[in-house]
Amino acid sequence: MNRTYDVVIAGGGVIGASCAYHLSRRQNLRIALIDAKRPGNATRASAGGLWAIGESVGLGCGVIFFRMMSAQRRQAHGAAVAVEASTPHILPPAFFEFALQSNALYPQLHRELIERHGMDFKFERTGLKYVIYDAEDRLYAEHIVARIPHLADQLRWLDRAALREAEPAVSHEAQGALEFLCDHQVSPFRLADAYSEAARQNGVDLYFNTNVTSVLHEGGRVGGVRTAEQGSFHCATLINAAGAWAAELSEQATGIRLPVKPVKGQILLTERMPKLLEGCLTTSDCYMAQKDNGEILIGSTTEDKGFDVSTTFPEVAGLVQGAIRCVPQLKEINLKRCWAGLRPGSPDELPILGPMAGVEGYLNACGHFRTGILTSAITGVILERLVHQESLPLDITPFLADRFEVGLLKGLG
Ligand SMILES: Cc1cc2nc3c(=O)[nH]c(=O)nc-3n(C[C@H](O)[C@H](O)[C@H](O)COP(=O)(O)OP(=O)(O)OC[C@H]3O[C@@H](n4cnc5c(N)ncnc54)[C@H](O)[C@@H]3O)c2cc1C
Image (cartoon, rainbow, N blue to C red; front, side, top):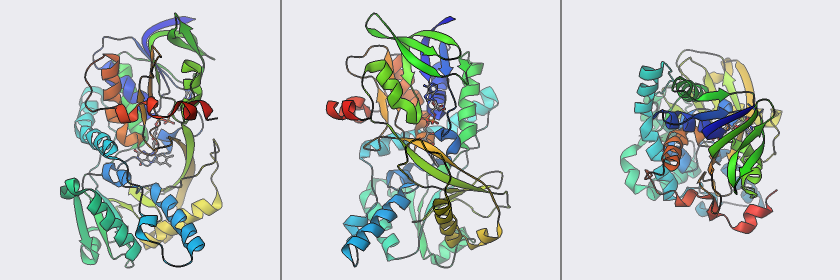
């Protein structure tokens, strides 16, 4: 069967769903959202943190990786490590702007999706506290504060007493915390469901359990996709929102393989319990986010294991130990589930957005690595404006695929 649309979106995780929703608000385009729900879909695996500052300064899933590197360096170099060698990976100012602008959209988006579409993605104002255990953590926190003076009004130091008052369940080992006041949380799968259901109510056709198998070219431009289950779809614009699988789709569409690689993250979920955490917590071992239903998410690992989505004892044990160290009461709580998801990673940890030079009818919306829940809102706005050829809320030059050298684009397997 042949179907014709203005826009076809390949990939229905939080990014594709946000693009569908934002494009559907004007109700002047025919839009199809196609998704295969491959094992490892990152949206359903995620913690739902809107940690605009925390993630921009290398906290969240970055911390474990950083600590591992720090330990390896320690082993290699013997004694103490210089601060520079163990500082977190702070992302460039363009990413801060992207993340903060997206974060600022959530309160209104939350109201809009409830009022117009009856969908509640459980936006909660929690803050994110970076819990400090030792001198190295404190140096790390001081380094962050020094690097972002323009965000000083969003930072709050908590000494030991203030932390105990704010988070009574946190261990006595903690010396204090640095809090990021604007970093909040949502339910990630409810967010994706809210976007796609609202898009459906606005007239978008949803094709779930549908695999894009190849890309169609018409008159020298991208002209649609072929699917295994639903035949061909013709379109004026194809949006690549295929998450960790975006490289495969870009190669079919443009002949160029984007440098998007799966980055595995394992995460744990406790049983429901009465409110134990007032806000989200992150430490040098793990992060914790108690959801509105009482469950606590404990994440996450950062692993280079291809498309593997197994859950493994050493990594799960590491997260459990880190969580108990921070909140000793967790010793008495049962684990409900653990799983792994595949973040769509890019070499510089920045998303890949917008057109590719010399390719008509094709736009990227991929490579969101560890912040796709947070940055889905601004991504949807940007893709909507690109389709309508309107001015953008921020300069996307740092996020264009063309920033990668052609050799890198062609060489990645
Ligand atoms: C453990 C973990 C914790 C995380 N925590 C956070 C967090 O707290 N906050 C945050 O902001 N981010 C977090 N992230 C990152 C976030 O989940 C991702 O950045 C985001 O989900 C990426 O969304 P996406 O839509 O690009 O990819 P996905 O959610 O993976 O969706 C891509 C979809 O495309 C489909 N697809 C691919 N190829 C095809 C094809 N050929 N045909 C049809 N469909 C196709 C796939 O089946 C999939 O459903 C976390 C990730 C992990 C793994």
